Amino acid sequence: MRNMVSDAPRTTLTAFYWAFILYLLLPLTLMMAMSFKDANFVAFPIGDWTLDWYAKVMQDKQFLEACLYSIMIAAASTLAATTLGTWIAMLIVADGIRGRTIIFALACLPAVVPGMISAISLRIFISTIDMPTGTAAIILGHTVHAVPFVVVMALTRLRSMPRNLVDAARDLGADGVVAFFRVTLPYLGPALFGGMIFCVLLSIDDFVRTFFLGGYRPTLPMLIFAKVQGGMSPEINAMATIVLVVTAAVGLYAEFITRRARTR
Amino acid sequence: MEPVVQFDNVNKSYGKHVAVDNLNLSIEAGKFVTLLGPSGCGKSTSLRMLGGFETPTSGRIMLSGKDVTRVPPNKRNVNIVFQDYALFPHMSIAKNIAFGLELKGFDNQRIHRRVSELLELVQLQDYATRLPAELSGGQRQRVALMRALAPDPDVLLLDEPLSALDAKLRQQMQIELKAIQEKTGKTFMFVTHDQEEALTMSDTIVVMNKGRIEQMGDPNTLYGRPGSVFVANFIGETNLLRSTVISSEGDVAALNWNGITITANPGGLTPRHGEHLYVVLRPEAIHCSAAEPVSGNRVKGKIRQRVFKGNHTSLMVEVGGGAMLNTLVHPSDVAQLGGEDIWLGWKPETTTVIPDRHAHN
Image (cartoon, rainbow over all chains, first blue to last red; front, side, top):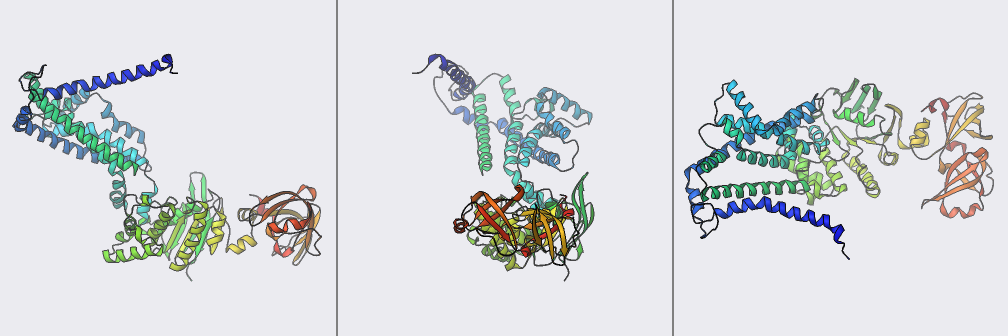
């Protein structure tokens, strides 16, 4: 016989869980639903359905340019952050390095500093070194923000790497550089791939740093922000839905790839 | 003939800890040499120094007549088979074996030929394109061996490569390793703590303890004529009879062991009256019988414990004064012994004598 009293906590927990899921998904669902509405106002009821807003977005030169710009910045900052992050991770696990805890703490700092503080300090920094706001400054800001994530992912993988692998490469005639590129780097591969996808998503998503460091060319979040200022329209919903679907797909794909590599 | 490997007064210490203590060792080309000892005896450190992964604190290491003491691992012609194999997980079996050849700058055709030849040697031709994760432990072991042999090293170093395998496979690999060594004619330097592995495969065994060489010789000598209590205990099972010298003349020494008079050949020793000696008596050298033996050393005893081991039965026999002797008999002979009271006899020439001063271990 089931005991109602002892089941109560469990039932409550399940109810909270579903309430949370609802809370999480409802705004997204609403946003997506409105992007198909055949009218100029974002409000219920949805009378007729249409794909016109998507067609409009795809022809919107501003949107396409902002997308391209965001992707360019993401690519550049990801490349820089992955290189830097891998290098720092290698430094931390290297033999005979003093103060590895301090290096690790410093490398992780940008991930925990509030975005606002980080953005202001970066802005002060670039004006101190007479660097103009704009593309280079944004890439710099995004790189600093992404490095900790690469470091952590690379370190986790490096620590699970059998020590003897590099020794074996050295033993068979590889110098340090060859051993790194032919053995360590391929071993890190899945972790770095996951880290890179994460960097891309962080960069595409970033608003605060870009806002403080940017010039006149808008990135995707800045463009959407500017459009929202001008009043809500289902076109913005369509834009946001495209971004949501693409980033979610990329994120899930990355998770799938790293998981497959881990189980091997 | 010039030795292929030579350690000259090699020391290695980590802070205050001395890992290798004044090692002097020459290894002849084409031999299967085993460094045997308990963990921490310095055998792995010696191997890693020869591989180039540790630098001696002092001393010199020669390889094929050249001083390699400070040469990095990628510049010396030795290869290691690691304990955990250390196969590159992202490369196929063929790529793993080809790794060292590519770095030597061989052309593709030559690499391909050498890889096929080596895969054939261990019957893994059909596995060339597989990844290491898709192979069994024994197969991975063979691939690691072939990868290390591929660049044709002056010496092949093996760092406890069999310890990850189960007992049955380990025995099979011992035979295979020895066969490959004989077929290729390579010098093998094998490190293990397993005395059985050492006895099975080696031409020469170097027993190490506390960073020093305890004794060096072929398996027969080490087993039959151990030079110290440590070696006697480490290799095989043994009875150590601590005795007092009564008299000694030439090849015959009369000794007092537990109130029983026994004789032994003191070998090169000239023991004096009252001196203490150890007599090494292997269990299989003892003959058990119901009647008193007519010659040789003999002692009466009582069976306290029998352990059936399949091909033999191990007996613990209590002799006078509470001393125990470990011996073994064929299972079918146990019944012929009659009761618990039996006679133990052994010929003096089957024992070895070790001076007591070596006993301080």
